[in-house]
Image 1 (cartoon, rainbow, N blue to C red):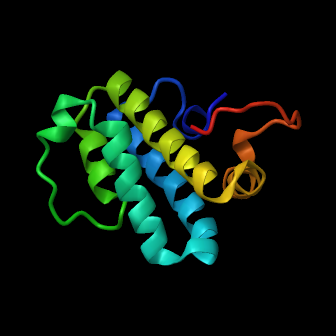
Image 2 (cartoon, helix red, strand yellow):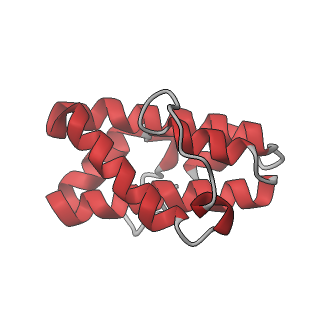
Image 3 (tube, rainbow, N blue to C red):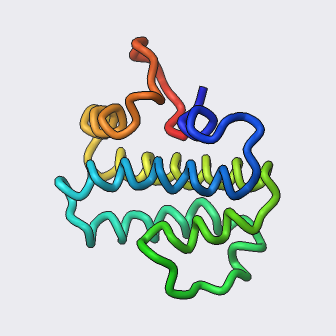
Length: 132
């Protein structure tokens, strides 16, 4: 079961998905700030949103304003989508963020950080896991 589904529930509306994604992001950001700093987290978030959400026409047409925090624009955009698209896009965003992190610092350290941020998202089995 994914981090988003555990946090939002399987019947969540777009606002619930956005809130769950925001909480998951915040938990990860707290862990990452100690390693790459706030500026690094913001840069990684911007790149992940560009890569993961760029395929959604409504994202590329969205007005990018002054939303609170580096994930604020993503969260605001998710709230305006239908629940299925919000779930798909939030999962894509968090997965892309994890994938970028893995590229920069390697899989072992990334997995330790993800487990620390999202202990509810991992089973005891150390197999290939879904980030979001």
